[in-house]
Image 1 (cartoon, one colour):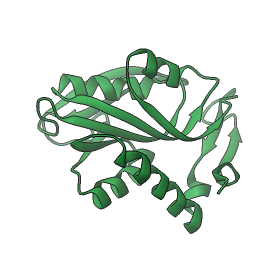
Image 2 (cartoon, helix red, strand yellow):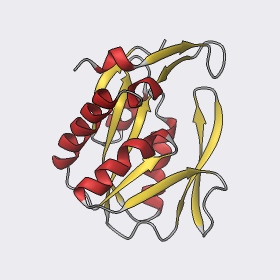
Image 3 (tube, helix red, strand yellow):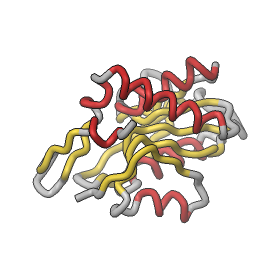
Amino acid sequence: MDLKKYIRSIPDYPKKGILFRDITTLIKNADAFKFTNDRIIELSKKIEFDKVAAIESRGFVFASTVSYLLKKPFVLLRKKDKLPADVHSVDFELEYGKATIEVHKDSISKNEKILVIDDLIATGGTAEAAAKLIEISGGKVAGFIFVINLFDLPGNSLLKSKGYKTESLIEFPGH
């Protein structure tokens, strides 16, 4: 299945100069959504991990399936002030601003291997912050799985240069 057909591109969103790759058109198509989840499950089975983590919010859509089908605990990596208990926080740069993500301090135990799933890798700021949260918590990054890699932006190369394993289902230019 050519998943690219199910991704909508929206120019100048969320700000001028950004070409937003929208997965809502993929997830509203039952066949494309099932195919995407099946591929993510196949990739996940090739990685040794203890828990699956997802980056808010579109990563939740795909990681919850991995958690359920592979019977792995699910760790939420959320935007600032969305988690009610004690958290670790990491600030980072986005392609279009600054942000903070957090994880509950009791979500990850020492030496647990964490698989991170998100919809898209662009500049790598969010994914790198996720890796830092996992490591601050005592865990190890088992790898990253993305639905989309924006291949002409530095995110995937950044993660690989830091020794992280990455997988993507489809590639688009970022601009």
